[in-house]
Image (spheres, rainbow, N blue to C red):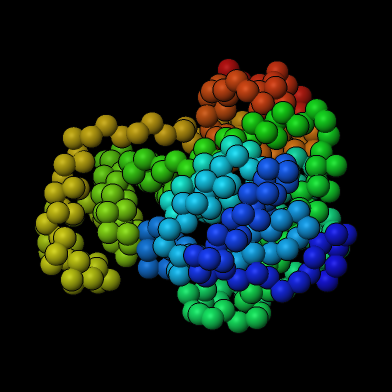
Length: 374
């Protein structure tokens, strides 16, 4: 494979303090010269609440890939210090940033995300790195090692090449997308990138985890309060024990409890799929959570009737049209989870309001010449 000035050479493997020191000096010189540094990670998320970092990939402007082994190097804070003032390139960094912050103490000050850039260049969002490299650079990446075991050592040649490909083409890809980006969208892209970076590094409140369930829209107030209480307990316990939430309490069981509102161990066990061990260890606690939730006020839910659905359809249509006009993906113009708030008139100031108003409010109300009743 070849693309411009990209160096397709054997990646540098770093798994000793001496090799890390040499790499850090190389990176320090690159950062001092104003060069961007591309980063990616490989991790395992199975059986844990927080993924475990298995590999850090870096690439300099020429495309030379560096693979750092975090399993062999317990102290990676010097890497975070070297990169503290660097201009970084990360593709879809939502999961990478928390890992790098935790292991390296990395504080991101200047970030470019090719996936976001593509979403501002009329290419849609979200786009995989494989698709972007093919469409923008004409490069085909081999992705056969996506689900391989990144904990094993030594990594195979195929794994190392896969990992290197994730960073060695980020420099020319970012430059090509930067050249395509309309000047009037530079500020909006920067604001969106900062917004996403902050969200990636901020742990969502445990008491908001119930919002992941679409069934919440059709539950009555009593069951919704139980759902909130159970989800909050599950999220906190999963974080404390570093377990996936489903291992604490499966989604199906959680929804079943919220719907049935059992008041006794016998009623709990009426669900034949309820694990006996969970029943024995946490049955009484679950019953207490459900009972106590009866005193809670249900969270405010968007109205879900024919009129609200019509207004939502108008908003979705407007965003699709505005995406064609601006080149910014409708999913970035207004994320799906924020559209109910927008319909309620809660569109905050900033780059979105600049791109959407005043036309959005008018379109919601009058869309396609159909006037919505007051």
